Image (tube, rainbow, N blue to C red):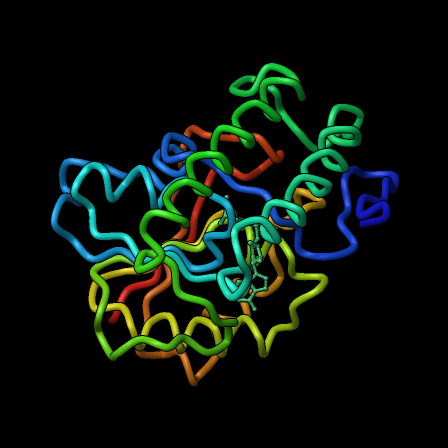
Length: 235
Ligand SMILES: C[S@@+](CC[C@H](N)C(=O)[O-])C[C@H]1O[C@@H](n2cnc3c(N)ncnc32)[C@H](O)[C@@H]1O
């Protein structure tokens, strides 16, 4: 797969969207989720990738659907693509100054959690293909107001250098079309640990004036300044 990771002065930069996944516990912390209150609710995980959030949440009775372009591929191909991405990030992330290691402690433990996530994902992807829907933002193949809560982790804002403002705006319009409750987008910073320039533009965009944007602080920070998510609600 070649070398996807480029090191620059500030830290880790990725030459494309990487195929890594977080666990349910990491999602819970990133998005300040209260699992008991989500039981029975319809949740959409946009750009879910090889995260085990969908698998673990469904086990708890939360009705999660995960959405990602990779779900058009068979399980073996997904893993063949994901494993080199994890190794590239694992080799580079320890020397990047844009990370705080309080939770993960070291790159080995980070890799262990990512492997745990992708292993749980893989088994659920094979056993419950109905949890996984293939497609690409800025389009979503779901009905209006189908979901109580939509989550986006490490896709919008984080990859702002690869995804332009119009992509962000159109994606949020589409996410809010399928969401009857609220959407949460994490983190609010780029991989340079800088606040995304798209957030103030979204707040001022007349096409989005029917939505409210609120930045919610959390106590979870790995990428520096990643201790917040953007909550989007229907005004
Ligand atoms: C860094 S991973 C994040 C995975 C997961 N959300 C997490 O935090 O563990 C980014 C994901 O974005 C997906 N992706 C890339 N382009 C996309 C698009 N146009 N629409 C939706 N997802 C996309 C990739 O396939 C990849 O799985």
